[in-house]
Image 1 (tube, rainbow over the protein chains, first blue to last red):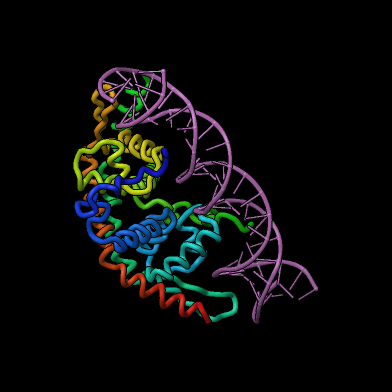
Image 2 (image 1 turned 90 degrees about the vertical axis):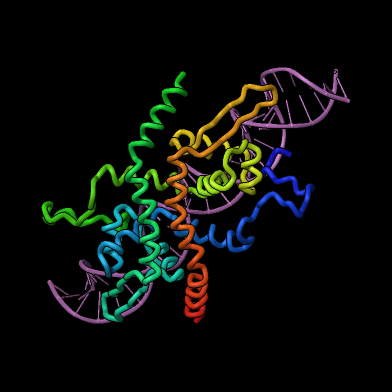
Length: 139
Length: 139
DNA sequence: CATGACACTCTCTTTCAGGTAAGTACAAAA
DNA sequence: TTTTGTACTTACCTGAAAGAGAGTGTCATG
């Protein structure tokens, strides 16, 4: 048995090995939510909408840069489902659909801002660390 | 031409469509860093090490839950390379290797804490939104 | 001499995210 | 009548990620 690295459950079930520190199912949901939200395109769309306010489909695609229609639709749908954006359809002849962040979307955007700032602030440190590591490994 | 959704570059190169707000290459790097760091296993290992301090390989695997040795090694290597963890090898007979977060690792952990907290705080809102969306879509 | 402990490493196979390209619906404009 | 614009679907395909499972090196122990 070399696989998944399981904890020795045989030992004290009381002491436990701290598999859950807060809650069993909350942690799972939090992970799932983060997993979805930490998605590349979701983050980019979030940023685009944060900076430009209400936009329509094609425009978001342009501003996001390099996203396919398929992924854009998909991302937007998920975000709508999660309550991060509102989709407003104007029933006119050439379709006209607008997207904008909800309050929830904005708060998420702010939360991510911390990570974004961290990345910006520590870019150099990371590159230095990488260079050092690679140099060490080269031997 | 149905693909990648490009911006109309034909128009004023001066006005630009705000493809870069801060920096062309910095943004790319930031994205790359976030992409790596926002990885599922990286976040989990980060959390485990934040909460338990210095740990050895197998123990991290147990605490992370469900990670394969392969992914654990890979994740840990990347984190080491990026300067997020230090790997200490004690050259004894059955190998003994310990991992702990660097200062950089801690700061990242803190930055992520914001997102984590956001997820915890808004779980219900998200679930409600999803339920509402699914109900609407069911028609 | 076989076994076990520990931290990997290697290979094989499956899964799936995401890209490409084409199609749909509808009406107004050319 | 063909084209245009807009916001999507749908079908197909591929490369990369990740999981399973076995193998490696080393020495102490039984």
